[in-house]
Length: 199
Ligand SMILES: Nc1ncnc2c1ncn2[C@@H]1O[C@H](COP(=O)(O)OP(=O)(O)OP(=O)(O)O)[C@@H](O)[C@H]1O
Ligand SMILES: [Mg+2]
Image 1 (cartoon, rainbow, N blue to C red):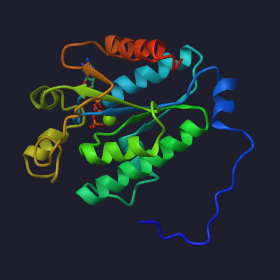
Image 2: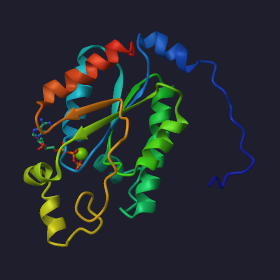
Image 3: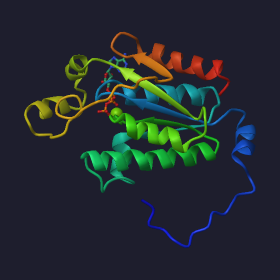
Image 4: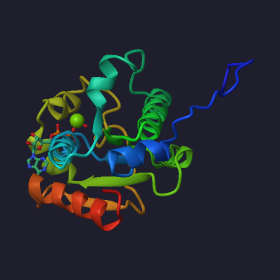
């Protein structure tokens, strides 16, 4: 709920579409969602690099990085997860307004929270990428040792173990990170962006 009063929006004289035109591509949010260890960070880093090499302007927002700064006052309760995603959504929107391709890598386990982000953007500005990977495979990878801690009861509310993950109903893109290489996942996304004329 907004607590600000006496505030008035002040428009720029450079528009989003001016910026997109100057950049030579559209701006959009590429929103990764999936279990911890499913490969959101890995694929998003590779995607950011691929887009950079193609001369496209992109910027990656990653769960842990954002929790170091902007969201360091938030935990992992449902309310805090919701607020975490809300702020990321607003930052992503600013990046889109700035003409940039925003790439976000957050578990974002709740469908409603992801849909709230979609709702603050214009049509076509939110590309949901589901990083599909079984909890067993994620647990086997366990790149940060988090599943081990969660199983030992050292982390409460751990997605996939003791907190829910709601699979997207109609993601724009699904990448099967259990059976498909990082390069193949990046190619799937780049091809989508080209086909839909984002880039
Ligand atoms: N095909 C693949 N695609 C993506 N990652 C893979 C693949 N095969 C193996 N991996 C490995 O799986 C792990 C994925 O971890 P990563 O940190 O990217 O997950 P994450 O979804 O960002 O998790 P978290 O939500 O905890 O940040 C990495 O160690 C990566 O090397
Ligand atoms: Mg990550």
